[in-house]
Amino acid sequence: MSDFDLVIRNGTVVTAADTSVCDVAVRDGRIVALGERLAPGREEIDAAGQYVLPGGVDAHCHLDQPMGPGVRMADDFETGTRSAACGGTTTVIPFAAQQKGHSLRAAVDDYHRRAEGLACIDYAFHMIVSDATSAVLSEELPELIEAGYTSFKIYMTYDDLKLDDRQILETLAVARREGAMTMIHAENADCIAWLTEALEAAGHTAPRYHADSRPPVVEREATHRAISLAELVDTPVLIVHVSGTEAVAQIRWAQGRGLRVYAETCPQYLFLTAEDLDIHGFEGAKCVCSPPPRDEASQATVWDGLENGVFQVFSSDHAPFRYEDAEGKKAAGEDAAFQYIPNGVPGLETRLPLLFSAGVLGGRLDITRFVALTATNPARIYGLYPRKGTIAVGADADLAIWDPDAEWTVTNDALHHDVDYTPYEGMRLRGRPVVTLSRGRTVWRDGAFVGEPGNGRFLRCARPQPARPRGESRGF
Ligand code: URP
Ligand code: ZN
Ligand code: ZN
Image 1 (cartoon, rainbow, N blue to C red):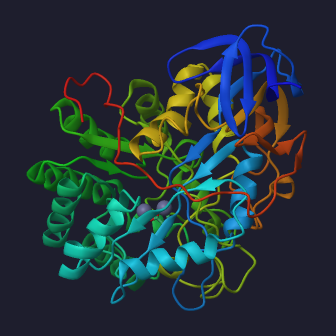
Image 2: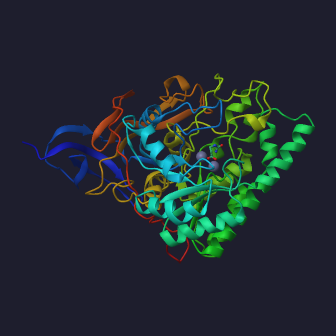
Image 3: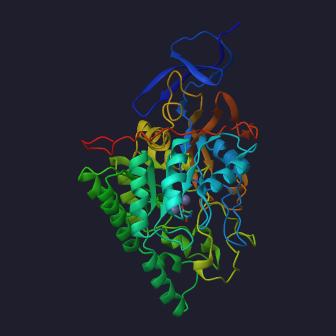
């Protein structure tokens, strides 16, 4: 009787540190041996000529998140995790969002109910703190951090979510004391409100004016302020969905001063520009997200930042709203002013293939950096490493066997989310997963989803263990 459930042979095994051609043996859902000519397994996969990658960790996505009246996310835990698995991702970290006036614990409990029995791959939760009352800060947040919800997002914009500077300081102080990671959505709410009012008064309500209502300076100012508040409290922060040159400059400045400022970017800032909001009729609504996509110069800056270490994390920020749907992008009608269009683009399934094709094969990122950005760093930063995010004896057998030569065209019909469009329709890509394994079970193989809702498990996170921003001498 074989000792191994599965042996993956002759693939190029990639971690954030190096690559080696070897076999990977799996037993009881975990990696139990790496080496040459391992004994036969009950099942075998020949991965010659292919990469064996740690399954992706998508550390920023929104699934079945309760929205305002009349608006609904298209993906729940089943369709969202199915789509992620088909794109080579094996762990997702969506958000349990506190509603103002409600408890944080209630949001976490509700989110567990939403995930229960549906997730096809493993998942953890970030929290969203939108009501930083003294009960939340002194009791709920510390208890939840201790219980394995060790990261939370705060907003500097959106009326129903934003905190003011004093509340941010008080929340950061809790993160410092409890050892949690704070993610910050950095855009200046008052600037956006003022610009939106002026644009609307001038009759500029089409989707493309969304970009004008949130210009780079609005993100730059908030990024600088978030960094300053974190410096004052002396706690690490991670600036999410960074869109371009001006915010990157603030983050580089902070990292250069040795501050523990981490940063995330997303496909929409590499592959879209503000011009994508200016397509026929209302269709620009498909690309309305915040911060908005910028210009080609910003795309180049974001690529540089992925390469040179300004960014530690590459996430999808999958925020799924159907286009042809009265509860989706058109919730307020086809002629609705841009400020009423639900924000966000889908991207769980396309995140890894887009970055691999344009980044690795495009000569901008080496394959180890690709793994660091898409799996290892998010696992470390959010306390899931080394169980997730790497290929090592003892780690979960969450793997993507990746064909670097597969040529394909992105079409929404072939994706597995429940959104009726992809912003990347028609893009020609090279490279994609041929097999995805979640704790040793095959969930995607040769173009078919073969996973099962309910097999995904909830993951309690340890305190963050971030990789240092590159070139920095101070640790966490
Ligand atoms: O437009 C976006 N990014 N929507 C998702 C919510 C958020 O702020 O991440
Ligand atoms: Zn955000
Ligand atoms: Zn988001």
